Amino acid sequence: MEEEKYYFDEIEAAKVVGFIEKLNLDKGKKGEKIKLLEFQKKILTDLLCWRNTEDNTRKHREGFVYLPRKNGKSFLIACIFVYSLFCDEEYGAEYIVSANSRDQASLLFDTVKNMIEQNPTLRKHCRIIDSRKRIYRKATNSNFRVLSSDASKADSYNGYIVCLDETHEAKNDELYTKLKTSMGTRKSPLMLTITTASNGQDEFNLEYRTYLYAKKVREGKVNDPTFYSAIYEADDDCDLTDEKQWYKSNPALGIFREYNELKSLAYRAKEIPAEEAKFRRLYLNQHIVLSTEQGINMNKWKECGKKPFDMEMLKGKECYAGLDLASSKDFAAFVMVFHIDGEYFVVPHLFKPSADLLEAQNRDGFDYTSHSKAGHMHATQGDNISYRYIRQKINEFSKEYVIKDIAFDRFGSSGIIADLQDDGMYVVDFGQGFRTMSPAIEKFYDVLFEGKLRHPNNPVLNWMAGNAMVSENPAGDLKWDKKKSTKKIDGIVAMTMALSMAIDNNYKLDLNKYSSSEALDKLGW
Image (cartoon, rainbow, N blue to C red; front, side, top):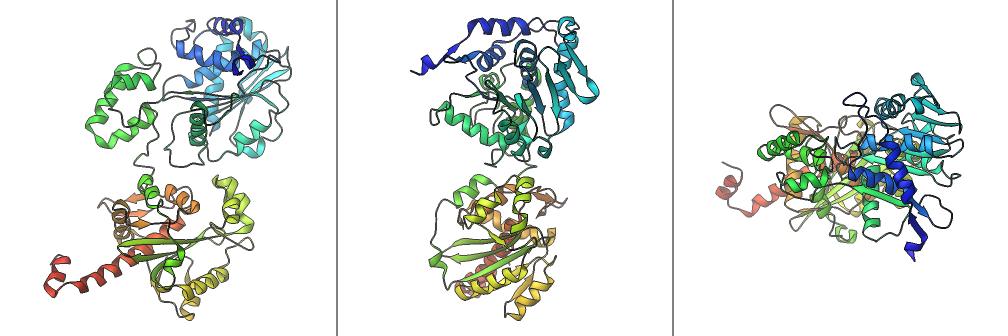
């Protein structure tokens, strides 16, 4: 029986609460003792006091704490570190905290340090080296340290309790993986991630991936008793001014989470729609896209990829193509768009040098290698993009499909464009500035929201769609912004160019269905 495998150590639980409540708060009135709230007691004792009946080791080996801003996530983790450092007799234990910046991790270190420094008994049993962000406990030869987010420096550790802070901002999961696998020799290790919500659009984001896993464990879809989660979030699509939802997502509300501030923010977001997404994300802990983060509505994009289509149906059909070439070591994208029966079918071909896959994978947090093997992208030989290979593939495609025009970004394209012209292709210079790109993006948005776009659910193109961000000038014109989009969007740029031409040429053809006067009406004359 499951119940017989584990037990809750009531004596340990009382010890945990008693120990922590003897410590002083690091903020507030000087000398004021900690008074744990019920939700804090539950998280702390759930993580530390559930035991395996067979060998008395900890049941939970990983904990996921998911709380909105200003609900004391870092305080909770600091309590765990201080308690374990002085009450666990694990010899040579390594306590590690890391975040996306050293400054961010240092805030948690300072909370731990202040708890210790304000308690004379604890202070005399350890050595604090503030300049190096280290705390040593002499009796067990254990140490607590801050680690930078540079995963290349995380190979030599043997973690006992490890915490990654604000994982929604993590660039990839390399540090998480290295630190978690470093704990293999410990009998009762504990890996902790604490975070607020990400935008929920990137399935490779460490926070969102862990959140989805936590949900599966909670729902019984995955049997993993070693995994623990504390998730505080409001219901999807709840009323912003529903106080029950405020308390549901903010367990410290009205105590140290300021009620009036949250109320003011909620009613402001209700009156100013532009602020709703931010309130839901930061204060209700919902996976919501902020206006500054996303250029493509991913729910609409996913809907357009749900209806698969047979590539054979496109053979011999007319299409328009977009060619986007970045640096020689980066992505290149050739995307064809077909207009058939009122819908626009997208066929992407994405190219990246094979020698750069692993390094780029670590940098971008995206599994290029697996997707290359699965045929979702082309890995060209060598450490630079092979324009010869791309030219060869385009010529092959031209034998299967009727490629009317190829739109190209002039940056870095001169050589291959001249070659394609020699091959008999028709090419069109397509500028990337506001003047040219804004109408193209608006056309893309139109067919996306009307559900007239059909894409093959290519995971690499899906990833690029989630990465895409736009810039807007004072006149309201838009363009794709590769600098703001910190990850790759080349396939979306190429698709937008091809789609724009396909729509323009389809519209021109549609005018032939009307009389001269009707055609002028369609043009707004």
